Structures are given as C-alpha cells and as structure tokens.
Image (cartoon, rainbow, N blue to C red; front, side, top):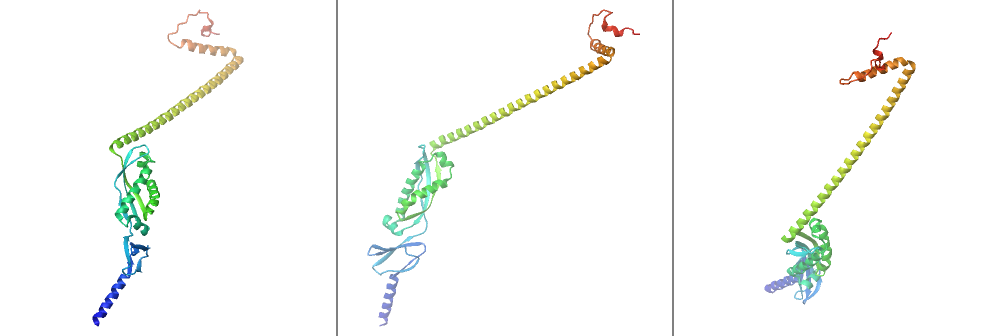
Length: 284
C-alpha cells in the first residue's frame, strides 16, 4: 500500500512538472499542440500546458550580433569600396521568426546579411567616395536602419543597430582618390594665394593713390602760400617805394649787388659811369 502511494505521488509530481513551464526575462517561448502553434510571446513567469499534448520551444531574446563579411560596393562614380559592417538584432515576433527561419539563428543571420548588403549597395551607390570618407557615418547608419527594418520585420526580427566599422579603398582606387584630393587642396591653396595677391595689389594701389592725392594737395597748398607770400612781398615793396623811393632804390641795388658780386666766378662788363655802381660813388 505504501509503495502504491509513493508511485501515485511520484506520478502526480511528474504530471504537474509536465503541466507547467517557465519563461525567463531573456527568453521568448512558443507553445505547440500536436505540432501546431497555439501560443507565443508569453510573459516572464510560470504558465500551464497539457502533458503529452503541448510542448514548448524557447529562444534567446537577448540582443544578438551579426558580423558581416567585408563586401565590395560601387559608389556614385562607379568606384569600388570595401565595407565592413555589423548589425545588432533581437527576436521581435517569435512566431514569425519560427515560421520564416525555423527559429534558427544561423539561418536568420544568413537572411539578414543579404538584406543588409542589398540596402548598403543601394546607399553607397548614391554617394561619392569623398562623401563616404568625410561625411558623418551616422547618416549612413540611419538610412540603413530605416531601409533594413521593414524587411527584417518580415523575419520576426527587430533591428537594434547597424554600424559601418570600416570603409576601405582598393589599392588602385586609393591612389587615384588621394591624387584627386591632393589636386583639390592644391587648387584651393592657389585660389587663396591668388585672392591674397589681388587684395595686396588693391591695398598697394589704394596707398599709391592716397600718396598722390596727399602730395598734390601739399603742392597746391604750398603754391597757394607762395603766391600769397609773393603778393604780400609785392605789396610791401609797393608801399615802401611809395613812401621813400630813394631808399627803395638803394635797397634794391643792395640786393642786386649781393646777387651779382657775392658769387665767385661772375664776370661783369660795365661802364664806370653805369647806374649799377652809382651808390659806390661818393655822395654828398
């Protein structure tokens, strides 16, 4: 009797254990009934099932990483670039994930890799090499996520992130690209030098113009002052002559003596009775 009770209790325990299943935070679960899906996306915790009729399959719900193999893509100018990328994904709809790829992560990675490469091929064909090298890659990342997500959703996959790790140029392309970049920098440098030379010439021409204007104004002012001085001198002489003509004549003669006799090398041929020497004669 005691053995029968133990057997009965054991059977009950087994049946109970077969009647429940638990779902962890990191799991997604599908419940089957005789091979048909009857439940999916269970909340974490304990759930019931019918022994021998229901069975469950569990899948990893954590974020997974698919590292793509480097691939060649053509740019807008029909040049090859080698792109190395990876994608982070997780199961979004476990039922769809199971029906499309049989719940196989490897199969999901193969399908997802092709989707990523098709989208990348389209994006890279819109851009030139210089844009791929210098532009912020977040723009490419956003475009890839936007394009890939609808296709991945058909596999029950949610795209978390897509990153381009490296963009390399084949050796034959690298040389031509660097030569073009160097030529472009040389052209920009020439333009800056040309603009600097033009600015220097404008400054120099303006300075020369200002100098000519200043010199012309100074010459004009000096001529005006000289004219005014001559006019005042003439006026003074005129007044002096009108007041004392004899003294004025004597003063003018002194000036003439200074200009004529005060310089060495001057030869003058004059008659003794010439008026030029009248002030040298004795005057009473």
